[in-house]
Length: 123
Image (cartoon, rainbow, N blue to C red; front, side, top):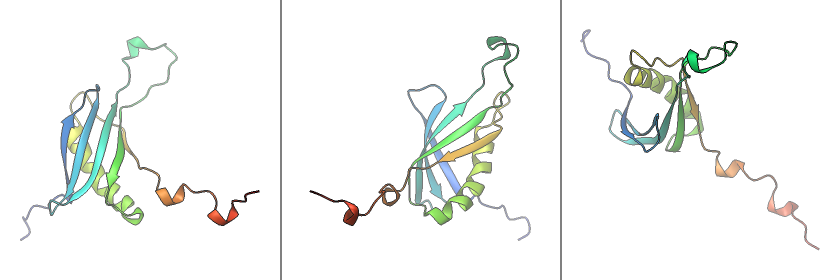
């Protein structure tokens, strides 16, 4: 069908937290399977009347802290490309139109080691 609606590949359930402008979310794929747990931080600029005249102008931003995910590193770019318009549509209002959405992921545990166990010498 040409008129068939395109389904979003992901959906997010949001809940407020105890911090202002911070939300917690759980992301599911179109099969309703868990994909990630995220924390969304709305970075909202101060009103121009609250900053010095020569302060640069900044735009609102959404920071997405991915706290847990089943995504592999090779899936991250596709995930962000699909999720960004979903978040922008869901979270934008007349007063809050984010300039960009930035994603941050936990460091992989296997990348945290700096040397092999064989390199450690004891006296």
